[in-house]
Length: 118
Image 1 (tube, rainbow, N blue to C red):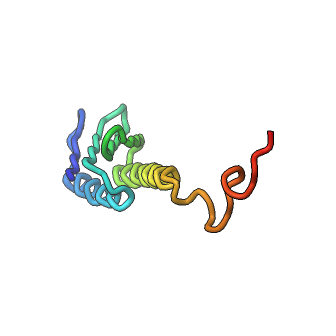
Image 2: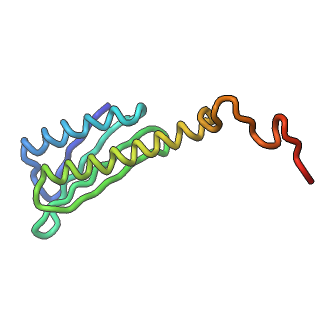
């Protein structure tokens, strides 16, 4: 797993680069298949923007972007958004697998015990 921090039209200070990597590593606990994380810093007018792309396997790319003046606050906001996206995606996958559809002992209408009416 690799974490890349790049600057587009801006030089990323060492402290901000380290903080971005440190916070991005926390995303690994929210999804098992994260392959790479790319953080792109850019300069837009008098503010900076941060866009983070998380590649989590085949066709699963999560993106979050924020604009502001405080670099550490941008990292925190972007990581929070990505945590929510990854958590929601993982819960969708779990629910879709069919393991949690019915409570134990409950009958599905039309399958066991209840005849279907015409």
